Picture 1 (tube, one colour):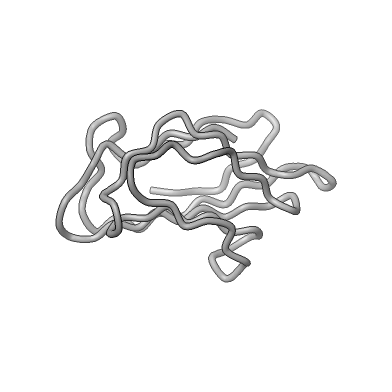
Picture 2 (cartoon, one colour):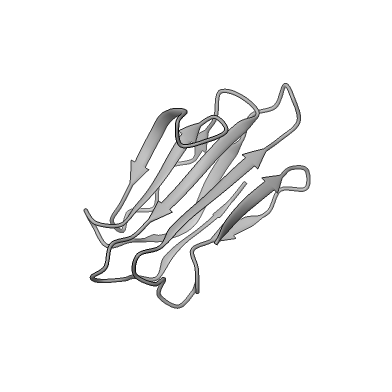
Amino acid sequence: CGGILTAPPGGTVTSPNYPSNYGNDENCGWLITVPEGSRVLLTFDRFQLEDGFDYLTIYDGDSDNATELQRLTGNAIPDPITSSSNQMFVRFTTNYVDTAQGFQFSY
């Protein structure tokens, strides 16, 4: 799971197996790149992760070494998230116990 995504045209990203439950021990990374001078905007349509154990972490740059913008877990649909540059990295990690439906976001 994961990959390199570009905009335009933009698109939709989902957790593995969505809308069915994602699996245990997932570790996915997506690099989103938009044209120079633009910023990345994530908007969430669905969000349901095992609270406190499974995470979607958003980074302000090209890898998970960049500044962390948000670390998301639980069932509340997050507010839109915007990068400060033309790149954003998204990491999805799950543990070995429970699973949930997961997420869907657009960029």
